[in-house]
Length: 430
Ligand code: AMP
Ligand code: GLY
Image (cartoon, rainbow, N blue to C red; front, side):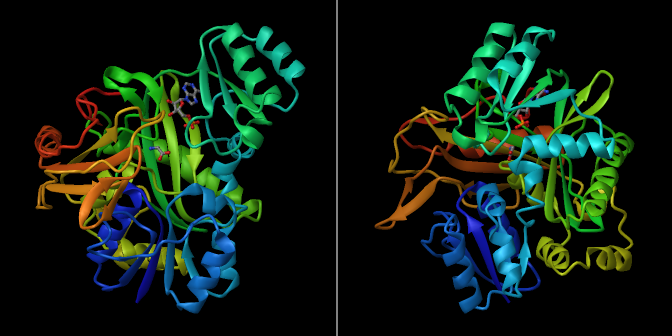
């Protein structure tokens, strides 16, 4: 079986790692992959965003299953091109990917489906946005509707800041075309959780719940990033509470999509805030989370490639029936273990940072530690940094505290000039 994984981050290394352990014994191609995927896959230096060229390659090579990691090629329609060629893909169509690609669309979907979400209004005109902000209590959250690489959400404590954020997006192209439509919503407070489900259009199964740490610095200070660490599962929420939360989100939104003629096949990721008045969906992503994937996949005791293939073939429900799985019970496919993933970045990230720095001291993989790579590359047999998020080191243990300890023991051995990581991953509840 030939599997092709699109993307180059820690998430894609974790997907390749999980596939490489599958009973289906796939040969794996990563486009473009990273330094960590070299031993388990064939890295191919192609641009994942050139979707026509990539779909042609996938057809020519008769790839059996393509797994699309990042949101940009999904939103651009890579999955549609592959299915149009009669091939299998794990990842939603462009239409279904609007759940992430357009916050205006996903907020409308949430509202119509009756899923709890913050009150909101959508604007394309700055004067109307300003009048709304001036007549609404602060704080407010201003969001670019389109994709903005995790940077398009601005939490504004005052009306002046909210007006400035809206003005930047609507009149000064602060996020290009992505910010020409904005969502303004009420600011919520509470703990956040990431719920990921595999969805085949009709049926779904939850993966272990996780939580990421988005801010760059310890104790949730500094700018938002793609994610500085994650852990799974969550000891502060019971299994019954999860089922209750997930029940309020997944069945109604999947029914809304089915009623709207949207066939969602892939991973649906709900970012949820547990507010004092109940769960509220902050966002949907049309893909696995990064770094949630590096924490979640090592916990699974069921073959994720089998599950992804069944999603692509619209037979997840059949697999679940034959295995006796129930959608809301993630424990059925998970070991009784904990994982903590700590991300090492190049200093400066999420702003500008140096690349091509030699990396030393990377620990070998063992039962308790998996050193996933994110922005790494190999040149002349030397491992170098090639991105802002460089490594995503996952520790595993019988308890959450053991997992924290192992992740940190491992990352402390790694040396590269300008390495930086948060010291409080899994230690502070965000
Ligand atoms: P999003 O891309 O919509 O998930 O937003 C990124 C981050 O911004 C979330 O993980 C939250 O930490 C924060 N956020 C988004 N929406 C809200 C909101 N309505 N109230 C408070 N924080 C929010
Ligand atoms: N860790 C959040 C995301 O993948 O969007």
